[in-house]
Image: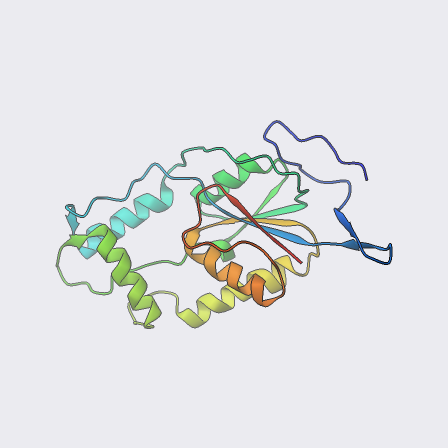
Length: 211
């Protein structure tokens, strides 16, 4: 099998061929791979616990984080031929995808991170980390304050796999966000893929799942 040389960033762009695995009978079997990548770190930092903010100020910080530029990091060169790359259309993910993939990146809102809202509009002040925890808890409890319900979020994750990834039958790279990556991994494992576990995904690391 002939492989093209790695580009300057250590990644293949549009490939000429697929990776193959040899079966015991001597036949060649195509093995599909899905790579999950969390965006690079961002310039907008999480405020400390001594910095107290109102619900409105918390939402302002969330918007700043969403629009923040990335701090470009390093990714270990990959020998896998990624035939297609999907990315969240949020700036931090899209810029990461454009740095690590030399082919055309397909933007999609489906890979966006779950939106977290303050569970109350009362004029109380709390640290940003605590607002994030309370918002995530409110989402887990299906509180009306959250924009996207658990049911809709889980449907979105399944749509990504069933309509974007598994229909391709190709090696696909997904650049997205930490929380949604946990659910994407869970669905991949349910569908027979094998790959590493993670709690909080590292920024810029490719987690490879194979079937």
